[in-house]
Amino acid sequence: MPSRETATRPEWDVARAQEILQAKKHIPGALLPILNALQEEFGYINPDFVPEMADALNISRAEVHGVITFYHDYRQEPPGRHIVKICRAEACQSMGGRELEAHVKSRLGGYHGKSATGEYTLEPVYCLGNCACAPALMIDGKLHGRVTKEKFDALTAKKGKAG
Ligand code: FES
Image (cartoon, rainbow, N blue to C red; front, side, top):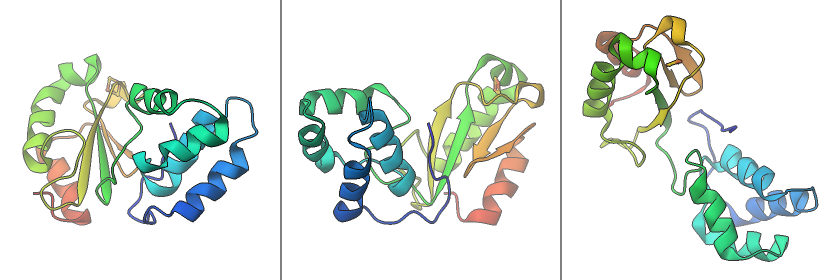
């Protein structure tokens, strides 16, 4: 699912969200493109906007909410300035991914939400297509392979305080 994986996301803006909604509400199967566009724009989907989407698409609020919660990539709160996606699939797990994950969690806190500094949001993914260079993770949309604890620390040191 597309997402603006940079530190330059704007604050949630109802007028801008409405523009996105109005621009896309007539396309077939509009809900997913709308949700994708909102997350791309703001980094998350404000749950307060569910009624507007339901009304515009003539579906129930429960249906909109159900789709948002079904797809784990959709965030319902603003992420940290930097987003770390760590691979938890087999190839990475067998190449030290578990130890790397434990280290990353110790630096950034648990999944979703934000790190103690508010700089990072950590999300699990299941294969980044970089299995040959396991273990892999992605920081702000940039893929990194053969990541060690030290390499992770160096990568995040360039971006901002991890924890
Ligand atoms: S299993 Fe981790 S990148 Fe494929």
